[in-house]
Image (tube, rainbow, N blue to C red):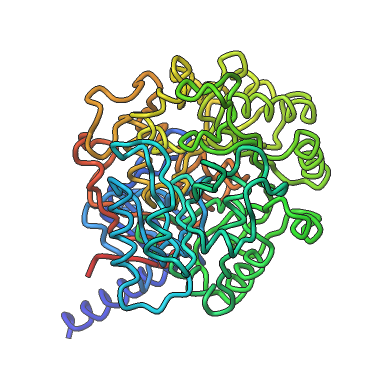
Length: 544
């Protein structure tokens, strides 16, 4: 009788003990957790309620204080704040996953072979591909469209270069757009002509005309594109993105999906500088996990297609200094609109002249140090005499580390001695003491791991060069991780709600199969994402 009473008392005490614990929706424990807080501390367990972190600490501390119906044993795995891509093209990613992938093709003949395989047994009214790069070929000159015309005389073909600033199109596509050599609607330098005929290569705004000539997905088709892009992001550990420009129709479609609860990824969506966008959005807008508060502008194109605007002629083509997109008058007016209406500005600047112009116009409006967080996207070639303007006017340099390792074997041909002033991430970091990083996908792979690897080691995936490309501008591992978590969040005014694993912030995490902070360089590119969690919900998992 006494033994039975003791047993009942023990059960009662255990039950009471459980009931005295605070209720959480999710408890993660037995992990190796990088919090990326202000002192870069570590913990092993996290309690989550209503999608928010309510506590972090050791296993015993969290398990003794909290109870839950849902536990995740991390089994010693390596947990980080959810990765945040600070510059990417979300809907373009989804569209690209449904077109012919030309990345890494070693010749134009290989491109033709890939296209023929891609369309085999498919009824097509047009052919789209993306990702070609003539710098990978033995003959590094731009291709011409004769073979496309022979193979596809009636079907429009539009193939976008890796940087998305150039296309090659066949004659059927040219006829569809309705332009001819000498057409006054083509800005100078944007159509390459030989013997009085188009070669098929078109740059910048004219390239956009070709891409826009193909019907864009709408309705359910667009929803499929968007959901496909989200799935790819989750597979790669991304819980947040900065979607570097969308049209009004795409933003409204995203807004609808967020309202319905179908989209889970956190998205900082930037406006294209169209009249309809600027008339529709008179102030920054937020809908749950979607933020609209940045105006995306351009001053130049890409270095690979010689569209980047340089102060002096290209070393491998003295006839050009690149292409200026738009006019300074319009650019200044758009920046003034953003300042008046409370929007950030993010301007694409590759060449040193483009960076110079953007920094000067920004400075004329911002006047002094501030917390408006205007940004320069890419900042690839910056004259040393201009770099201090980032700090002077509190301008954020937003970088994409894999661009450096993609460009490093040919960029010096374009720039000559100016290569030493290029991809200077450490120098840019010194201006504000922080900077965000991203991939610019789908131009580069959707992989924060590759971003981290390129930023720290300045090598490509073949581990070249041995000592790294301009290693003096490599980031430390801690800086690289911050650039794609807390600093990326700060770039969109969200550092108080995400970017680190701290009480009160969103429960956004990524679990990796190895510790990128201690692993040797040769292991990092093969790191796998085991689980992605957004707001306490597992949205991707390889675990049973």
